[in-house]
Length: 365
Ligand SMILES: Cc1cc2nc3c(=O)[nH]c(=O)nc-3n(C[C@H](O)[C@H](O)[C@H](O)COP(=O)(O)OP(=O)(O)OC[C@H]3O[C@@H](n4cnc5c(N)ncnc54)[C@H](O)[C@@H]3O)c2cc1C
Image (cartoon, rainbow, N blue to C red; front, side, top):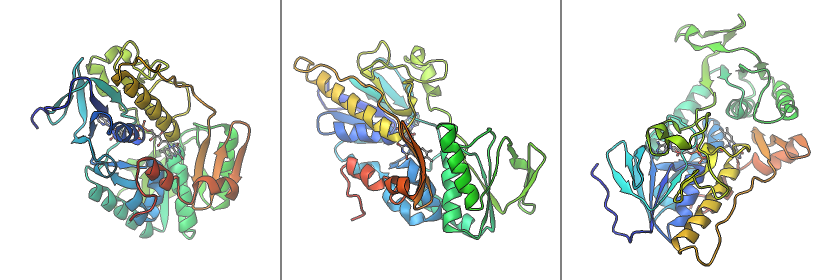
């Protein structure tokens, strides 16, 4: 791809790198006031926390996999990963060179995604068929993805044998022990077998032989498996850029209270990629997007009338859905499980709310 030439005035060009939860919202909120380019390797934004429901109900993904162009009508989408940043430009893998006045980095976690929405929808259909054609399912990983997938299958297909193996001493290590124990008990009540402190040798099973060996010497019979392990931060590529000294020891981008990258005036970082000591959650990534957008608008206007907004971590809430009705929720002072906390998330998985924040109808029209 040739370099992209922007026709807008100097001072108005914003480049957002990453079209996930934080980047999609930032691009949407800035498009009316700036000349915005959104860089993402895929053509769509996906509501991540709805993905496990789409595996047991592929049509659910029709509302949760959204082409960037549907909510980001005024800006430009470049479908290729960013590979370099200089003081003035971003370069993508396809060779596009895009100049910026303000830069927003929101690359979250690395994953392998299909490029087009249609391919993503087909992937859910394939995963669904794999589940329905299996009598027994092995889930590897007991973080939020593994727990939510085990729960979705146990609720929708109670006749199937579900086994969840987790390497750590407890499930859901990103929340407290109470929440982890409640999730464990809930899964066991639905006849999911949970095996802790063990890993699975995935090479031990072959097409004909569906027996998996664990590190503890156990054997598990399962017709198929799903790998639900945590994904690394998508920040490694930054270590070859002008921002290489802005990464902390864990590869997170260091930001100040205005969400600007340390020692940079016009570069912001938002979402899971930041080094802010708080839970990594989508609703928090959206708060970051709101603060960065406000600050970019203030800076674009010359910054004379208003001061920059400050981001302060708030009280943390984590809700892990357990099928269509229940959930386990950790609030600042109490942790609860069942259908009452389930009312908050489990039916629609915040899909309507997330679509509305991007100016879309909660339902498909
Ligand atoms: C199973 C599960 C359930 C969850 N449930 C909830 C919940 O109920 N509530 C909640 O608030 N949060 C929840 N979360 C957490 C939430 O999904 C994340 O906190 C959120 O997605 C972080 O947003 P982000 O924009 O920082 O990153 P992501 O949403 O990960 O987006 C990153 C984007 O960057 C792109 N990208 C990567 N590398 C590059 C590159 N080099 N160039 C350009 N683009 C790039 C990717 O394609 C992607 O679009 C859940 C997570 C999981 C896994």
